[in-house]
Length: 263
Image 1 (spheres, rainbow, N blue to C red):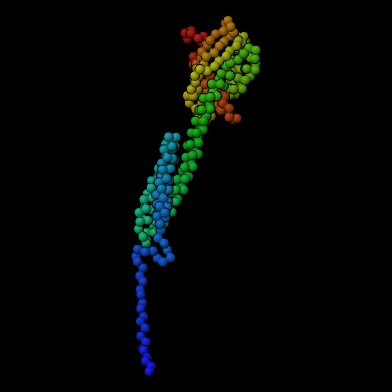
Image 2 (cartoon, one colour):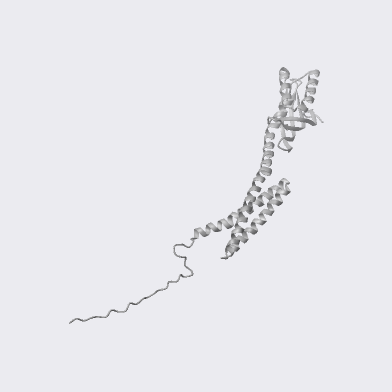
């Protein structure tokens, strides 16, 4: 006996899978916290650095008296700050605001480039000249007293060589006056003249010119007629084409006097 079992009707079950709104699409991962930190750094810290750089440029330009660079830097800093705020606000919205955020980001990049140019200009027009002036001041503070000491000191036995050395320490303009003074010493009968600097100060200076105040002491003549002398000088210096400081003028503020005598 054969029993036939009817086949069960096939059941077509269709399961709809809907994507949860808070899940990333298939094949894509939601950005991690490192990506978020990186984006925040690009949007905020870089922009803040640009603003800070512009404000530093403005401050240095103000000190050096370059008003155009100062106000240009301030204007760029303000615009970069506004672009930074807009970029963050628009970045918090979706859809149609993305294009607007891209445009804001592009503007931000352009302004960052402008800030870089201002920084370079600040270095070339403010920092480097000020550094050169300060280096010249430090250099002259060391070399100036030695130059004047060598110019004014001479020995009877080597007077011609000493005078020639002194002429090499003077500019062309002052050398004429120095030669006249040396001729007067020859006619009067030279005696040993030895000077040294006891104190000095750079009064004003640029990269190539300077004024110094020098307090000097010295010995004139030979024993037993040797005298101790003092003098106060104001000296003008000029840097030559070869980079050497030379005496351009020498003014005696307090004439050489024997030590202990009233001036």
